[in-house]
Image (tube, rainbow, N blue to C red; front, side, top):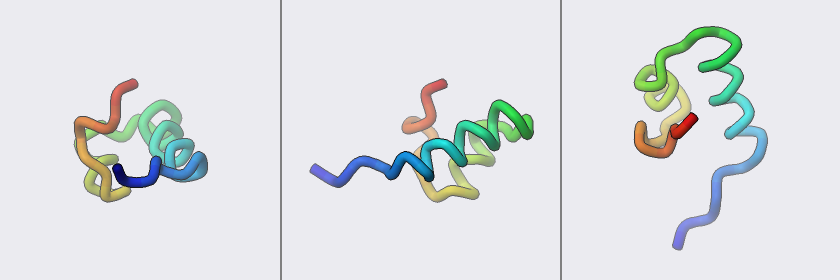
Length: 40
């Protein structure tokens, strides 16, 4: 099983979506995580 994403990366993704209004699909591409990983 792969290691979990770091707290810092998770916070950056959340901030980009919630504070900056970035679409989840774009955030997944920018931060190189699966779209399915982003479950806000």
